[in-house]
Length: 365
Ligand SMILES: *Cc1c(COP(=O)(O)O)cnc(C)c1O
Image (cartoon, rainbow, N blue to C red; front, top):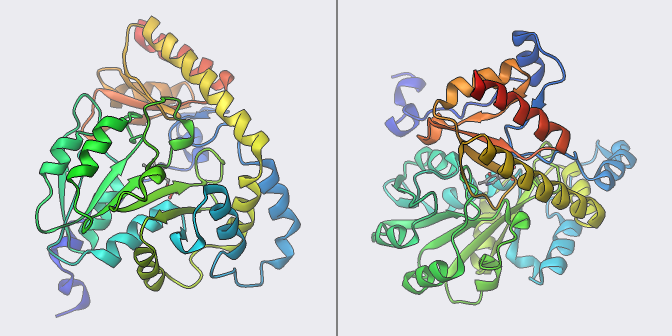
């Protein structure tokens, strides 16, 4: 039997993540220029300037292997968060941490629980190791933590939560989270994906780090891809309540999983409080503008705590296509079984206005 025929069913039935085409290709295809990309929740201000200048200064060191331990970055993040370095693990984006956790703690037939409309990567990596995903429907676009707790079985190894959630932008609040925690066995690894946590302004938001002493097994995920504007560098990290959990994941990871430029850039970005402040201001202003203008157009929307917003346009694929013709790239939500919606990243005010004008034309027609 040849190698391809021996591939098990759970690999054969995987559906590859569909990345968008390069922006240049889309522009050529549609005969447009200067298009605005509001599709991937990237920082509209660009990368931290401090990260850019630090990386430029060190380009002549690219022949050297990176620090396999991320020593300086780890020390910097530990100090900032008030945790010990042994609680930290860095990855090629926080996506790699998701994968490492699954590869370390799940075996074929084991189960993971997550929301049905959450980040697609969770179910992808679980399936890749032969695990089984139990996807729990959202309730009014919010994680239904009671139903998630009920979906846990003796086979459950990992629970995935995203707070704020992607693609909804919603959060679950402190009361629901604390009720969930009380029911949770410490034998289960609960991964709280907080890729957007810096954007949250809601005072009832439960920062998972504050619950690391609760006796449960928590892994909080953070990233440099969103607020810090470093999505292209690929760097994110996990903070574990249990150092043994992190230690096991370190054994599974590749020795040089985080590239050198990412380590330099992330450390510089961490100290770039000016870029962070401006990024949060731009998001706050843009979110307010989009929320008001979408309401004026008479469209539904899901209240968002993150840097993007779900808008109900009835036919998401069609509106996506029509926006594209006007040079605005958003994300249709078919993959999340939300075909009536598009997800739009908050851009600069100029980009937000261009989007609203394009949307207005489509609605009027
Ligand atoms: C964008 C995003 C991330 C970040 O992934 P990286 O690999 O760090 O770029 C993680 N989780 C969710 C839910 C996201 O939307």
